[in-house]
Amino acid sequence: MAKHTAPPRRRHSAQKHTSHKGVTLYTLGVLLVAVSALLFLRFWPRLSVDAAPPAAEVESLYKNVGNGEDKSLCLMDKIEDHRERQEELINHMVLEKLISQLGEKDREIIIRRYFRNQTQTQVAISLGISQVQVSRLEKKILKQMREQF
Image 1 (cartoon, rainbow, N blue to C red):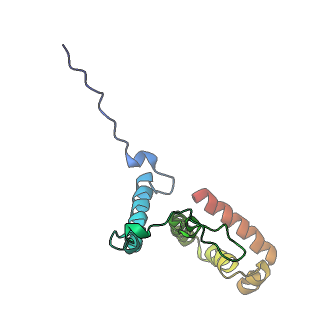
Image 2: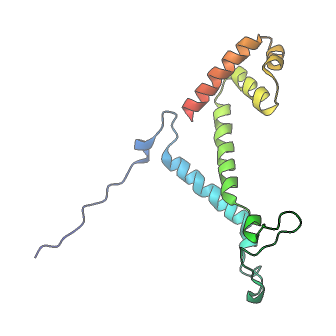
Image 3: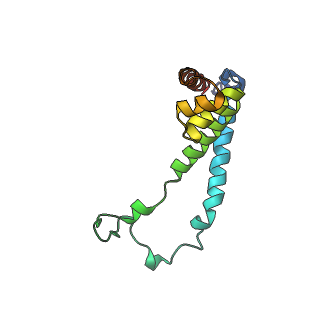
């Protein structure tokens, strides 16, 4: 009787999943694992078993803790959602990488418009170009950043 063996598993090469800018899915996965580990370590003291209250003091997550006008507030509503922080951190890292790849003038326009909240007219004056040019450049830069992402 012949032994039945499963076909060998194919390994997927990270190079097969490389974007046109050289960032692999493997790299993004490693980055996600690293960020998750850092966030876990950052909040570990809060997760410690020693820090947990005795069993007699444990409350239901749905216990009503609201007061004043909002009496429907429960303990569950007060728990932080760390997934939003992770997403925010990853978005920040991706945005920083995209901005660093821009040319000096393009980077200056994006930083002034979106991080310093300057109007197109203010940016135009500081760079010595017209507001229309700033508008066209901004549109082109944002399109380029979306394509790279």
